[in-house]
Structures are given as structure tokens and as C-alpha cells.
Image (cartoon, rainbow, N blue to C red; front, side, top):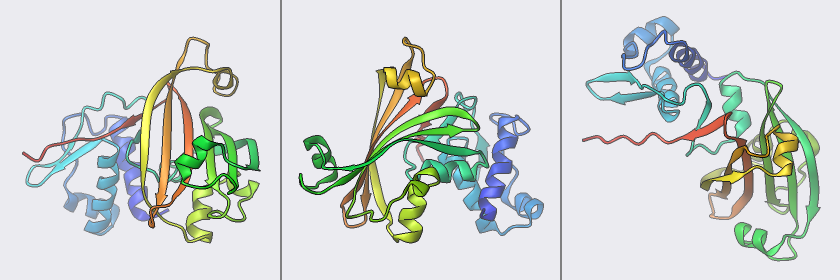
Length: 239
């Protein structure tokens, strides 16, 4: 794990435990450089991770403020981060595993053709996974990927990290993603795999991930328990 992620983990835990209380200032970068034996650039990267998560806000000349975060008891992810759940949880030193529910190759329905910008005769992977965080059901993911863009995908990649396979073995890198977040009623599928009650709402996130040439490589839908996970977007004004 990179040094800046290790430092971010330590600082995040201090914020969660209120060792650094809300509305106080994070120790300045000179102090953190000395404490962690790291460069100023490494400290800055660690603070940037916390800022992405909505935990702190840095303003030149005023230091880095610990935000009074109303969602800190829930697992919160930045709404604009799309490098994958495995990467997020590895960075936070949390145990994430996967259960494969479905892994097929099929011809895409018209809706999937539209989302992935492919033809009716271009096969796709149809992947259903339950992501399990520290032995508790966490997220239901339903993912479609074009086979010609992701050749050789195997169950072993699904059990670990599909994105690691894309980045490290296929040398594919993302340019961006589009996300739509909405509330929905729990389905029998949610109730079975996420241990939802019939009356529980779920948070649904639809996502299209794009390669640098503009080609969609993934369309996915994730189903999140309302009481377990949420998404944050830090929107601050410079004036």
C-alpha cells in the first residue's frame, strides 16, 4: 500500500474517533511530515483522499478543517470516485470478498446495446456479484462488459478485482464515468442477498464507465442497503 494511503487511514481513524474533533484544524503539513517521516507531497496526497471523502476541507492560508460530517457513522464513498470498490476498501484496510451469483456470456438486450454502444451480435459478460464487507452483505452488483474489450475474464478476477485485471493485465484505463443515483423499493433479490426487509428502501447506483477513446466498457447497477452505505459529494466555494 502506498505511504499516502497508510497516512490517510491513520488520519481518517483519528477523525472517526474524534481525536481530531469536528470544526478543529488538522495538524499542519510540517507537523505531519515530521510525525510520519514522509514528504510534503505524500502528506498532501493523503489529505486529498480525506477531502474527496468529505472529511476535511483545505483552504490556502486557513489550514485544513475537520468537517462536522453528518454521515460519518455510515460507510461513505465519494460519488465521483470510480476506481472500484476493491481499491477503496484496500485503501481503508477493510476486508472485501465477493460471491459470484451469475457469470455468463450472452448477446445484449437493446437496453444494454444502447448503454455500451455495441451491436446486437457483440457478446457481453453478464455478471452478478454480492460484495461482502467484513463478513456482512454489502452491495449487490449487476455488471455488463463487452467481451471484445475485456478478453479472458475469469472467475478468479470476479472473486478479487475486475478493475485490477483491466488496469494491470489489459492495460485499459478509464477516462470517466456517468452515475445516476436513486432510491428504490427492495426486491426479493435484495431481500435474499442483502438481508433487507420488504419495507426497506435501497439506494440504486447506475454507472457507465468510459475508456479514454470514449468507448463504454461497463454498464452496472449496484444495490445498496439504505442503512449501510451512502455517497458524498464535497461542493465548496472558493469565494
